[in-house]
Structure formats: C-alpha cells, structure tokens
Image (tube, rainbow, N blue to C red; front, side, top):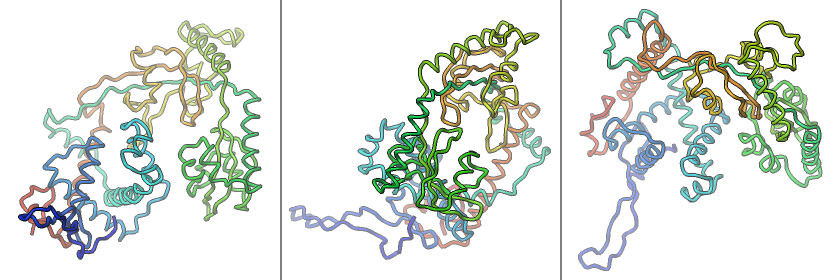
Length: 467
C-alpha cells in the first residue's frame, strides 16, 4: 500500500447546497485517517475494503470487527515494513499465481467473468492490475512470517507433554483419511490430430515471422496453458530442472529473442517457444501450447480395455491381452506394473502420494483427492476396485483410470500413538503463533502509533497500541 502523508488526514466532499436556510451547507467526511503506524496511515476506506473482502471470502472475526479489522491492517503493516527492510523477495510468478487463484475463486462464487466485471465495474485487465500490489504485499508479509519462524522446532517430549496437558474437548478431530492406488491409461491420439495441431503451430510461427501478429497476441488467443496465456505466453525465470526435459532442451538452446523455436513435444502437448532473457542458470521464455484432442473412439477403446482389467483384478484371472503367459492370481499391483502409464505412482504399486507443506504421505482427506478420484472412492469397501472413469491428470491430459481403496481410517479424535505427526503440527503451529505474537508486541513498543479516540476503548489482541 502506498505511503500516505499526514497532510491528507481527512478527505472532504465539497460543500453541497441543500436549498435550506437552516442547512446552508453540509460537510461530509467520506474518508479519514483512523490509525497511524510508523509513517503509514490506515484509512477508514481501508477498513471497509477489508470488511468487504472478508465477507466475500466468508471470513469471520473473533472480536468486534470495528476493532479487529484496523488492528489486523496495522499488524500487516508492521510485517510489511520489516519485509521491505529485510529485502524479502517475491517473484512475479508467485504474485500472478495468487491473483489468478483469487480471481478464479471470485468467478466461482459470482458465476462468470462477465458478472465479476459487472460487479467490479472494471474489465479483467483492470481487476488484475488492481490486485497485483495487494498480492505482492500479502506475499511479502507471508515471506517475513516464514523468515521469523523458520528455525522453530519441537521435540517428541514437547509433543507428548502438550498432548498430556490438553483438555479432552480440545483434542483435534482427525477427518476420515484414505489411501488410494490408481491405474491410468491414456487414449491414443490419432496421427491426423497430431498433424492438425502441428500445422496450427507452423501457421502461428509463419504469422509471427511475417510480422502479421506478435507471439504474445497469439499466445493470449490460442495457447492452452491458461496460466501463461493471460501473460502472452510468458513464463517466469525457470531453471532447467523445473521444466519438462524436451521443453528445456529446446528452450535453453535458443539464443535469438526474435526467433521462434521448432515445434517441441512435451508431456503436456506441443509447443513453440520464444526466448525473452537468460540470467545465469535460469531462462525466461514465452510459449504457445496446443493439445491434440483424443477421439471418442479412442476413449471408448481404452475404457473397454480397462473394463476387462477390472474384471481380471476382481476375479484374479489374467486378462486375455496377456495371452495366457501370466501365472498365478492377477492383482491390482500386477495391473499397475503391466498397464499403468502414470509414472508418478507406477513404481509404488500405484499408491497415490499426498505432498503437503508438512511432507509427503499416502494418506488423503477426501477433500484433498482429485474430484474424480474422490467420487470413485466414495462408497468403496477397503480392497475394492472402482469402475473405469475419465479424469484429468496433473499434466492437464484426459486419462482413463481405475482406483482401489487400499485403506480407510475413519474420523476420530487424535491419539499420540497414531497421530503423532498431526499433534506435532499442532504444537509447531502454537509455537509459530507465539513467536509472531511476541514479535508484534515488541515491534509495537518501538513504533510510533496514533489512534483515533474512538478506538482507545477497544479490546485488542496485541498490547501496546493505546499509550
């Protein structure tokens, strides 16, 4: 948020004639500075904007919102100022990702992009531009908080002691968790469809080389990478290891920003690439992604094949496609080894992995599973195999899949023996909360603070605001 000078303490509307002898004019306050924290001012409009945003996001304030909201803004300013002092860095990709996620959330709530534009009285470009600075600040605040708490650790003894002293009604409830194995098969793309996509990309390259259009314009209209398409196909500075190997080989070989690469096939589809800049071991490029469309016939062929695979697993008799060469009882794990093309799970008997900030686990809450998988798992008995279904994998491709419910752990109150990691996370969160709370209290002591008189009787979360 831009710094505001105290000279604009109060913004007033012009005197308005009411045509009444007793009310020659009316001075209406439309905005005012209600707090000052350091050299930053908090306006009444800031509070109302946060109140509106919290209502849109379904947030609830623990105390009186008239007191809690300005205090929260003040706390964010303390973290933000420290982040600027400590040069906490935020990448453009992080900002863009945050903005896009927020916009998609708002669209899902309102109904459509058109309704969002009508509600905001702005077009999408203006909405994104307005959101970028606030998301930059939000990311910097979060970065500063991570920096302040990065060295926190707790011992097993501390976790056990915390759990022992915890009242029964405060013990966390662990939602139902499942472990799921998966087999996926990707329908074959017809060569004619691949040729069609390549011809489109050749046409884009020709139009760019002839000066009929720019790479950025064509990316916005035609690229099927939604994240980068909005930015004219631009990807942020990226290392080789972060990219698909085939994509990286071509991207890192580019030397002329005016040239367009040859067509390259990655696991996501087909691309053309243009160099923007190189910086050390990282590269910045823009690209256009086109994905071949699989035919209904190809999908039906694979779904029929997976039907046979489900029958084989359920009966234990190897599918006919193996031609009688398989010996023994045919299992789901055999199906994974012989037929699954999901490289993320194939080497682990098809067991899906849930990667979170706390680490990697095979346990999923139902809400954390891909929607299609959760729907297939719902109602399955442990050990049962689902019917085939169509889903989108994490590379944006449609695949046919079957799943097996390996294990289900019903919702329950946490126990120290079975849920040690959950309890450890609770203790870690408490520790982080205390460190941040103490930091804010100490920071308030050394920061100039001035409150409007009407806030002096508030019950604040942090001490030291009122002096």
